[in-house]
Length: 338
Image 1 (cartoon, rainbow, N blue to C red):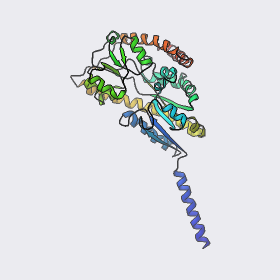
Image 2: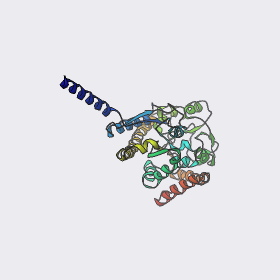
Image 3: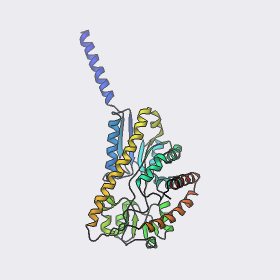
Image 4: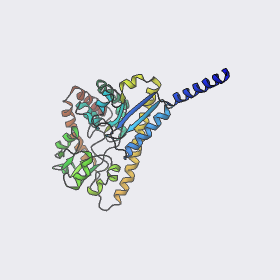
């Protein structure tokens, strides 16, 4: 009888340990700023799965699409309140909390390639600035990414800065609108979900929206036949960040692993989107109704000069924004990019 009891206890303990081994030490509910059907979101899902495998099941990521819990502009507050554990989002969405987020999140006209932005973030002081900016919100910045230099959607041929004058243009509030207004365009507030309808009905002539492949897939180029590619204006910072409380409870090996995973994610998403853009461009070029416009270096330089003036104006809105401005412009100058 005693032997049977010991065997039962041993089996029960083994079963208990097996269940414990399957349970994650850290469950992270992370909301994305992208819809579930986008390539961006698929790459983010791949990242979440890799994190679980790399951590040997100690971290489990519950990735949610945009709006699943809160609006995309509210994730920062939701993390602080414990409603979410983290986000994968465009940093510029929080410019209403501090203009510094708008400046580092999308310094219009600053970056010509994804490698430039990531070099600044990882080696030029950007990561340290983001860590500092998020600290008051109880949020730990884990790492930086981006998408690609965004394309530009237009119903009218636009080959120069002069062609922007009077253009009814959908653009996000903040620095993006400010720069285009300075270039002579007429910015319009319009949610991303209404861009297609706005173009179709003539509410807007053009839109700052996203990368070429996403625009093509959404049928944007079918209603606005004059896209500009490669883009000349926008390269958004995408950050992966989590609750400071969750971060502080993690052992150092998991913290290091998470940071490394974001470096991998940034390469993955920028590469996949570049491949998708190249394929989408070929499809668009085969359509006789679509004309792709590629701005000359001279016109790109003119737009950038306008943008540079607005960076300085925008930076005056807060001490943190001024700090971002000085950091980015120093990096650009030091690396011969300005």
